[in-house]
Length: 308
Ligand code: CP
Image (cartoon, rainbow, N blue to C red; front, side, top):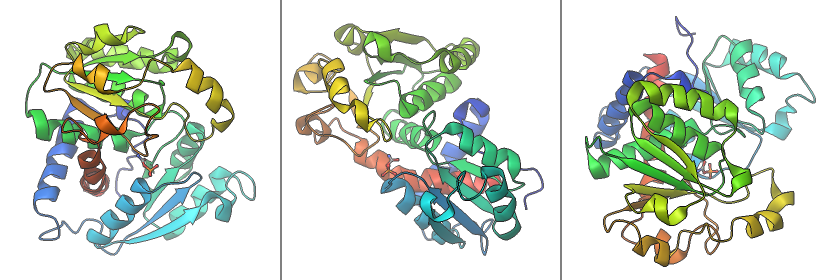
């Protein structure tokens, strides 16, 4: 067990300095991949619990743990029956006796909070209904690789104010980037997310805006971001959401109205032809697959941050 337990549940719990430190570490790890990985997690075991499907998160965490000299164990939510076969708290109390780290993708954010509260080992949020901090950090690293130290940054998220939107908003608020979310009126970020983001933004000078004016928002954007209109667990709303998000697609027409050097990203998987067209996702503006690559390096840095 680490001397002082830390968890990664939301970037809103991070200081600007911690975010910068993780990103610098991730950048170094990327440059030196497989050459001189630190040994802080060597011979330790990380258990990964997935209540939802995953490609990127599962592969990058498993690879990260392997490359850091540790051992990953992958478990589906069904295998454990968390909250059904056994309480979340008791799952945590068992896991802490055997392994050193819990990585959890859960439907409810409350579940990762319970895991963190009930165990003496670190817990990493690998996506909940509220936040996806690892994705936001991978975006931050990818943005940094493209724009460097620039402080004059405006990120525009187009689409549903979901877990990825919340985490990127939190990231921008913490590091001082301007952030605008463009969404239909009934899909704006919830007050319990807006409030801490606005408080963080007041400290860093970040300007947080919620609007329905897509063209007004993108004309001075540094980066455009989008995600699927229907997140995992909301499948029953798919048709309604397709109707509600008409006009919120990142396509070539929208791109032509943004600055010529604008970057475009997506957390993936993408629903091509819905929230983003293939022409945009595969264009020279797109950093989505670089961001997917950076999940590996950022998550290695997160693990080392927890075990340093
Ligand atoms: N972006 C992301 O978390 O991908 P997966 O759902 O495939 O893990």
